[in-house]
Length: 239
Image 1 (cartoon, helix red, strand yellow):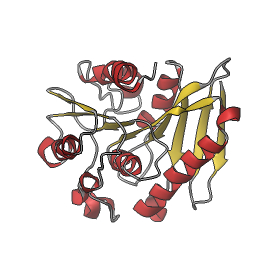
Image 2 (image 1 turned 45 degrees about the horizontal axis):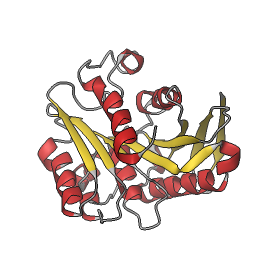
Image 3 (image 1 turned 60 degrees about the vertical axis):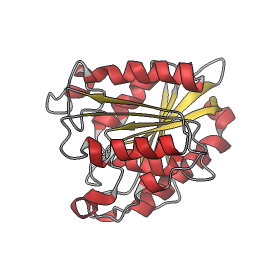
Image 4 (image 1 turned 135 degrees about the vertical axis):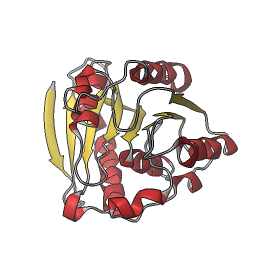
């Protein structure tokens, strides 16, 4: 595997590329980590990228502006530029742009949903882990965001969402439920898993991410990854 970093035009932003050498173009997944714009967590960036790589995906991590440089608009631009770079270098990156999607966690889930809802999005599928949907955490995070439930359209890509009923930071009724309702009203193919165990911010929820996440994991909630792969194969045609 070749791992490299490329700079983006957006200030304080870059793209990490995890490229598998392959005889054929592979599906691609662009990963948007969480962290409340304070940092980008390893649990849902590098470790998620490597996990998808084991499933024959080309993986990418967007490093968007955080801390004193944090900006929702800047983060959106970084994501747009990342997709533009991947698409324009698809042959060299050995990625199938018809099977290129986005996954986001928590605050990164809001950004991923926002990009998926853009009219000119390159994402063919969207995966959202315990996502922020409404701008209820803007003051806490120190940014000004978008209510992405209001930007869903019939052209929004097929979407897979998961979370935990124990999540007190992005409660189901205020976030996932609202987004699922918007997807349904717009007749967007979607699947939602609201687990009865687990909590917010546990990424893959297995030992691989728990060891860098305060030993926080949940065996039952960790099933989201396998379910997501099955959904990609059955609904989106990504195998």
